[in-house]
Image 1 (tube, rainbow, N blue to C red):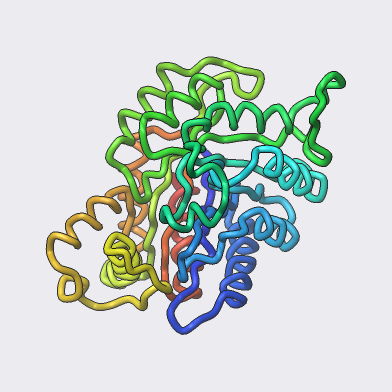
Image 2 (tube, helix red, strand yellow; image 1 turned 60 degrees about the horizontal axis):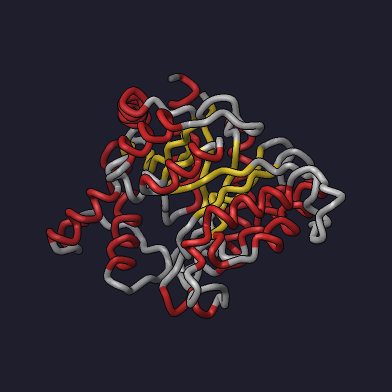
Amino acid sequence: MRYSLLDLAPVPEGSEIPQSFQNSADLAQQAEAWGYHRYWLAEHHNMPGIASAATAVLIGHIASQTKSIRVGAGGIMLPNHAPYMVAEAFGTLAALYGDRIDLGLGRAPGTDMQTARALRRGMASGAADSFPQDVIELIGFLGPLDPRAKVRAFPGQGSNVPVWILGSSLYGAQLAAQLGLPYAFASHFAPQALEEALEVYRRAFRPSVYLEKPHAMVAVNVFGAETDNEGIRLRSTMQQAFARLRLGQPGKLPRPVDNIEELLPPPVLAGVNEALTVSATGSPKTVKRELSAILNRYAPDEVIITGQIHDHTARLRSFEIAAEALKAL
C-alpha cells in the first residue's frame, strides 16, 4: 500500500512565508527519501497560517526541488477557477515535470464567503452546483486532442494528468464512483462520513478509461515524537489552530502547549478532538499501533499523512516516524 503526504505550507508563529516555502521543499526532499509516493499541497485562502494559496505555483516549486516523488494538488478548489485555466496550469506542470503531476479537485471554496467572492468566480451563479460539469470539462481539456473542438488547452491537451475527486461527504464519493475516478476523503479534519463514503464509493464504482477498480485514499493526522507525551504536546498546535479557525480567528500556526485542557473550553476542545479522530499520536510504537488500527478499520488503498506541527525539525521527525511505521505495516 502506498503512503503519501499532504502539506499546507504552514506558517508558524515567529516565522514568515518565505521560510515556509523553504521548509516545504526540505520536507518534500526528505519525503522522497522516506518512500512517500505523492506530495500534495492544498488550496486555502485568507489564512495567515497557510501559504499554499497559489497551489499550482507551489507545486512547480516542489517538483523542481525533487526527482521522483509525484507532486500535486490535494486539492484545487474548482469553484474558484475556470476549468480551462486549471487545465492550462496543470498541462504546463506536466510539460515541465512529466508524469509526476496529480490533480485533486474539491468542491468547497477553501475559504470564507467574502474571500470566495474576492476570488471572483461564480459565487452568484452557484459554482459548486456546476462541479460535476466542471470536472468533466476539465478532464476533456487534459485528455486526447479532439480536432473538431473549437476550444482546446495548450498546454493541457493530451497531458492526461490524473484527476482525483476529493471530499468529506457522500457527494464526492458518488461523483468519483460515477466517473470512475480515484477518491480521497478528508478524514484528517472531517471524519464523520468516512465509513459510509468509502462504502458508497466502492459499491457504486463504475470502471472507466482512468481506473479499472476503486482506489480510495484516506487522510490521517500523525503527531509522532520520541515519547507519547511529546506527541500529545505537538498535537496541541493543531488543536489550537483548529479551534481558532472554528471561532473565526485564524492566525499563524500556534506554538505547542503542555496542557491544552487549560487553554480551550471543554466544548470547543471536544469538537476539535472529534474532528481529529483519524489521527495517530505519540511514540513510534504508539503511532504504528494507531496507524495499524486505522488501516484495519477502513482498508484504504492508500493513505495520505498530514499534521500541522509548529517546529520544522519536529515536523520532519513526525513524518519520518509515520513513514517507518507504514513501511513496517
